[in-house]
Image 1 (tube, rainbow, N blue to C red):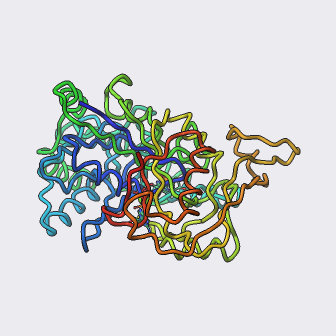
Image 2: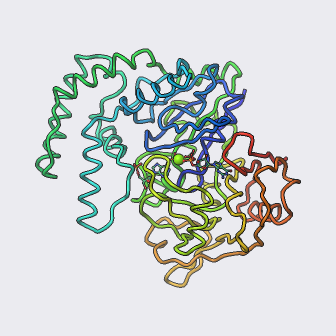
Image 3: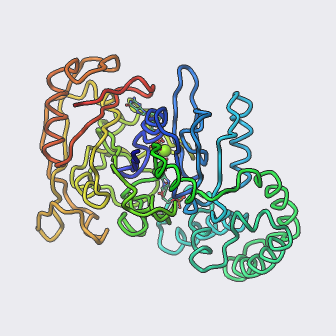
Length: 428
Ligand code: GDP
Ligand code: IMO
Ligand code: MG
């Protein structure tokens, strides 16, 4: 029996979907434990490209149970659409289960996400740059203990009462605070009752299934969404999401204890990207940044926004090693760096007060206008997308990876050189 947590080590979009898909081939259970349809995980099988938002990235394997854990916020319309699209492509999704405790995204969450972003932009000139999917407002209701959960969705009389109670409060906020248009609560009830009828067959207890599978000697994979630097506590607050994408979130969002985690695999890219606002010390605003964006196809899977790009940040990577307790690191997307004469790696930050730090600062204000301290390595010109072993890689790439490993102080055990599931290599 074994269990692995897969987490993002940067600001998201590190290629987690690809790694989970590869590892899911040997997994009996894949469980998503945080976030919602703010995630966009890409899985490539031959000429087929799947963009998954709520469905766990193991869904293509009919024998693998795919769980949506209690820590996930579920937009039922999005999930049903995703299931329908997969059905049309021959994927049954009969292996899907949703934890009864998962919170449900309601129309007022999406509306409040938009209104709050507009308000912040007007008030301070800068907002978070959320995905607009209602993620933050849904977690807010959960914390306020007025959320509507999966088990409410399948009990119409409870659902009706909760929609009236919570909806009334939300309508007051929407109309009186933001001057927006109230939600039609009767129409929402009819709509969501219908979702409950369709989703009832998937409802289960993800905690029990995961625990029993592990006890029975099966392989369990915890699929991380978002990433370390977007964590509500350990990310660049307030420019973060509202959940716990770090490794500890896998336990909280599934309902299992930390002793059930055998390995924690951090996925990163050989450079850094970020979507949305917030500090990004190694960001490039020049032609190198554009080069990386184009070579790596760095445009958002969820919103299509161009991703901000920058050099690999080892301060961030070391931070991810510590807060997640990483046992292994995967470095994806080395291939897009081809053609750059020099590759830079940030090893420290020089703060505005003159101090040089190697630990990631707690206060994001320390990151504003800080100067990255770089080490520089030779680039490569060769096409590496067909390399399948470390030894096949050009000497410059081998040495770049070895240097990264030295700097981040964690074994790099897998490399990605293209989007396909076979474009990876393991390093012994
Ligand atoms: P996730 O959110 O972490 O699952 O990542 P996304 O799917 O949002 O973004 C990663 C993008 O990079 C997707 O388009 C992947 O198909 C692609 N990708 C993953 N690994 C590699 C790689 O090693 N090389 C290249 N060129 N593309 C990759
Ligand atoms: P995956 O799983 C990249 C970012 C948003 C925004 C901030 C808050 O594909 O790596 P939210 O809608 O969650 O309230 O937005 O978090 N964000 C992501 N960025 N990849 C993701 O997921 C993200 N999920 C949220 O862009 O800056
Ligand atoms: Mg993504």
